[in-house]
Image (cartoon, rainbow, N blue to C red; front, side):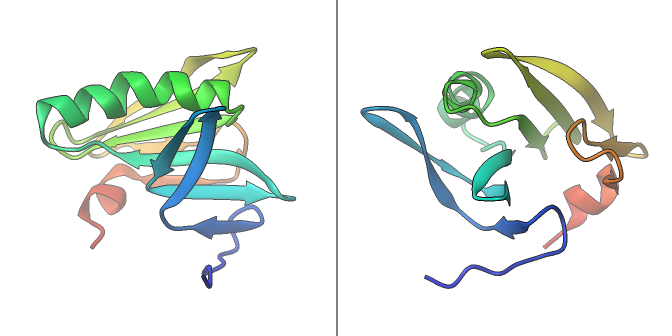
Length: 122
């Protein structure tokens, strides 16, 4: 499968599977790779209650176990973006951003994105 590249870090890729545990893989909405390792995962929170629980709780644990350094949670219903940074084997909150604010990255400080552009993207 061909993967589109972008200038952010080494590359941006669409939906990919990340191995969270020996027996479990998670599909990520967007991954950012740097020198053949995953440094960031971006998830769009699903609308259903069950899927929201998976996106907000289960995937956070799985991505931490997979060693993904940064996890962005885009929540269209709440119009927010939460950026989590991996510290040891758990995530801490780098920032919580709402419409009208600009998202920053802990692993790529020069990256800034307005929340409105993220939420309004097609």
